[in-house]
Length: 371
Ligand SMILES: NC(=O)c1ccc[n+]([C@@H]2O[C@H](COP(=O)([O-])OP(=O)(O)OC[C@H]3O[C@@H](n4cnc5c(N)ncnc54)[C@H](O)[C@@H]3O)[C@@H](O)[C@H]2O)c1
Figure 1: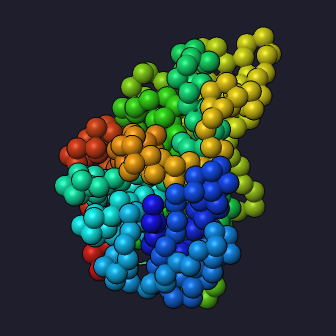
Figure 2: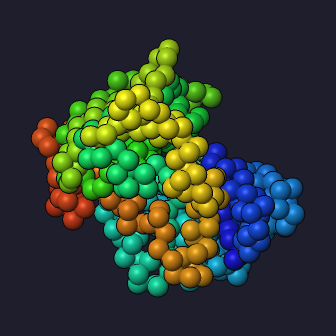
């Protein structure tokens, strides 16, 4: 498979590492033949990392459309700001190229729907690199809960704070602007969490949320912005199977971070990546859960994402991290944003089918300001 990277920023190293891991595991069929970034220095630097780690020469581009026209590509992985996901994917499909998209699938649900339709129209594969549901540990957690280790699932509690204070999460100002990112960290990080809830516990029926922008000014590396993306969100979830969820994520955090996921059921508590605690004090370490439920799954989630892309193209195998599941995860996040925007609980179904979209319209208005 001839693969190209579109975007060579912060996360591209983890992707290259995933491909190196796949090679180590004996999958030699994936080759990075071209890389593209509008920032030439980043494309050049990434191409030299490809040479050092895979031993191949990747052609360098600053215009992905030129790359699509000149290179003989099977697939691309798209690693750019969220506002570009749908248009880049559409151009790739039209050029006959399969796409692996980074989470979130799109900046907002209507664009995700468009991408899924475009993939069907051009008969191309669209997978999602969503590390929170890939890799042995995450696959094992979902399979264990589906297998009933917790009995009936009652509750999921998930709290995540990132001490970005008044600086930029990941060093990237765009993540705090909803015209570029779709919201603040609640979209960027939030889809990781909602996707993993869907995989472990099942569909979410309704969401209620409060959100805020506490930090009105953020600064770093000589750049000052007035964020338009939310920096704190507190949410309540009701799942289709009756389970409840309390979920929170925030970057307006000073001093000390905290985080952790607890899934409670009628038989015990699962702390993904840590342990399963059962009644009577019995604790099962996570290594044993992986051994039982995902012994043959690649450990590295990014390696697993490329394996899924490869198997979807070559064998038409349904990926765990599908675009459709990514669209549902994005819709849960937008149900929370819509709820906070209009002050009432929101059905995820109404976001999925586009009938509730007042928050999404504010994202589109801001996207249009910059286009
Ligand atoms: N764990 C994860 O799965 C994970 C982690 C981080 C980021 N991501 C996702 O990966 C994507 C990129 O994030 P990042 O942290 O690398 O961001 P980044 O800002 O560090 O990098 C984005 C890169 O895209 C380039 N770019 C912008 N427009 C382009 C265009 N039209 N053509 C080519 N290149 C272009 C920029 O110059 C930049 O180098 C986002 O969708 C993000 O949500 C996923």
